Length: 65
Image 1 (tube, rainbow, N blue to C red):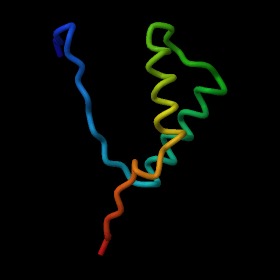
Image 2 (cartoon, rainbow, N blue to C red; image 1 turned 60 degrees about the vertical axis):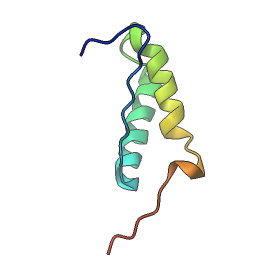
Image 3 (cartoon, helix red, strand yellow; image 1 turned 180 degrees about the vertical axis):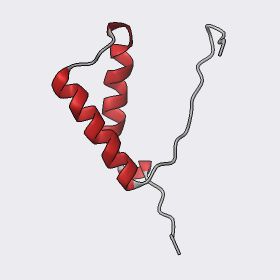
């Protein structure tokens, strides 16, 4: 995807608690073993903050039945 230099694209993901647990487990693995790409390490760091330190307003309750 080609992007203009003054444009940043955002994506909203809706995940379950179990999926979030998987993301945190994956993040912990890379935190313990080190990230694999120097050029994307800043993105890795900000993603870690988002998935490992969520705020209460990051969640939307929905009835399942």
